[in-house]
Length: 442
Image 1: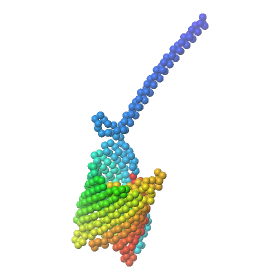
Image 2: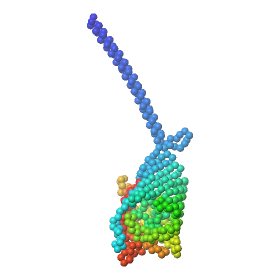
Image 3: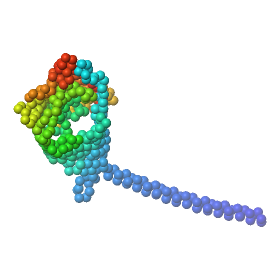
Image 4: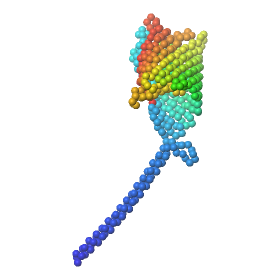
């Protein structure tokens, strides 16, 4: 009997355990179902969020057909350029140009020569667009241990017309308006510096349609010398047709400057490079009431070959003088790319960036260009003996990429009536110059 009771007890326990295990299995099945349902809901939510993010990143049109809404986009053009909704854009910009070289001067003149170097330009700035057709640009130069504002402007563009206010280049000379990043020699033509071309504070308007560009503006002084007592007016017209594959450029400019009573002007120039302080042609200070200038421009680009020439006449009105002197400067240059597929850039009535067809880093060697220039400056007239400069220049330009450049120059400058006499009072002699530049920009 006892054995039978024990067997019954064991059977009951086994039945109870089976019931518990069945209950546990049922619970596990229920939990697995709940987990699967939760996973499905999570997957659905993730898919919906992804679809919403994708749709927002693309162009969305709301129910009443309003303008598309876009997320900011970032492009890279030497530096990041951010473009946002409604026409906003922002781009940091900058350049670094470091020059070095040698000058050889007759020792009897007492002028220093030999090695020289400098950070020619070290600029940082920003530029971009704003809604409504407005634009802005602001740059500061840190070269020479000084801080100077270069461009500081606001512009408004409507169709073929553009209005600009602030500090920027006046409309004088193809050479002057071409950025220092894109010139074919280490310095611009002698007359642009000698006649005091510089950025000034003012307002301008320009109209460009087809092959014609018209520019005009009224200006006062540079920000560093702002007196609001001097004013000037500048105008420039450019005809720039393209004949076949050849880009032509024909232009003319006029300049008038009214100077406050008691003003003086001085016209002078260095021998090609900027890292020397010696000016071998120099009028000294001249009392003046006004300046009047006329300029002519011509250029052509045909594949690897380019040509450019300019002339500029500067007349100075002097109080009490019987004759007002007229000084003259000009140049003619020719250049040729030795590398296949390369040509000089041109845009908006001035030379622009050269972009190597086969840059370094993409299996190529960049672009290589040779240039030759004759540069003339005459500061003798109306009883003023400022001297004459005949410059013969050669340059070799290597651009590994769009935004880098190495440039080497040689110059032979022959002077008459030079500001510094040599032995025996001789003022006709020559100066040799070698200059190199390393440049990057963004």
